[in-house]
Image (cartoon, rainbow, N blue to C red; front, side, top):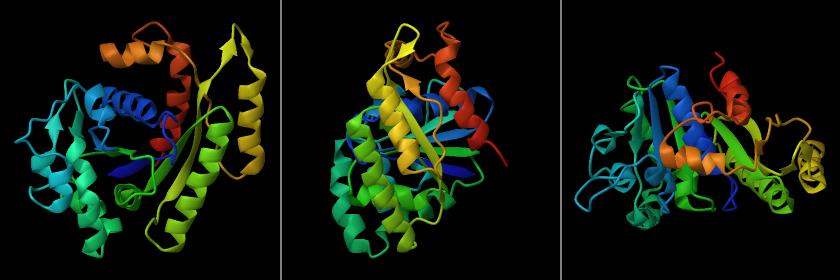
Length: 254
């Protein structure tokens, strides 16, 4: 089982969009995929069409050990794709994680119980230096960093890499960085805007050893795909799916 955390310390960087389409495409390839919503905003849970009732377990109950990991997993409407959902109660788990003494490793320990059930785990991580973020990163074999193709995105990349480096030095994260995927790359017709081009170039210049994946172009088709539960290819926009195709080539490499 390969675990990949989609992490960026600023909001609006494309984490949930990237996590959703990556999980969906992996599942369509016949891989058994577990999506984990580790963000109290619960956007990935919503995107996957999962509604958590008050008496139903979510990631909160899995992390605190109120239920087994398997009891916190739900089938989605998509074949091969399952989810551990989030709800607003996930905010409350920070105190538990902080006081446990092993907060950075709790999700990793919980996932060992289902290691034989899934090929891939995709984690959508809360965009902050929180205990939830710590345990999500600590569970991962790989970290993918989505960032906007603008100045805010460059700054988010710098902050996120610093955070990942700190956790690596503490041995809380023992995986590797898969790469960076630029988000909302703006084009006018067939011409990339100067702002997008310069900021993506800045990412490559600042961090020459990092893989910079093809960028996710700014397009309403991504929102349409999420609403309809379809891939970009199914919507007739195969070219927009190219970044995810390249991502999966690396993610599924043995």
